[in-house]
Amino acid sequence: QVQLVESGGGLVQAGGSLRLSCAASGNFFRVNAMGWYRQAPGKQRELVAGITSFGSTNYADSVKGRFTLSRDNAKNTVYLQMNSLKPEDTAVYYCNAELTYYNYRREDSWGQGIQVTVSS
Image (tube, rainbow, N blue to C red; front, side, top):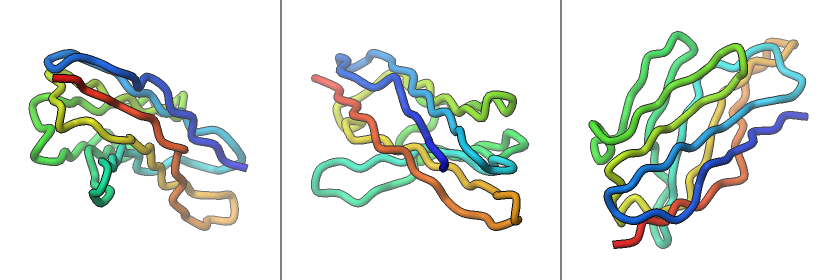
């Protein structure tokens, strides 16, 4: 069984910072790409930032220069540092990881979601 455990969400004022963490655990061979998505009320889920197992990152245009994604491969953990937060960043944030299992099957796994609320 695989778990993605998210932490670090909450309520912050505009201009503030939060750091999200997501740790993958369970019976798999390797964690490949990891990333964060978000979904605001009435909107589709969108990619916020992604990182490959080699550390290459990509960001949504709306968060470039404000958010930084990093990972610790030894801990199967990804971190999203969010600075200069805006009310439009308010959403439920979901961690995503592409996993390779011992039978070489590759599959996406999702966290349960964590609320980030930015007040104006």
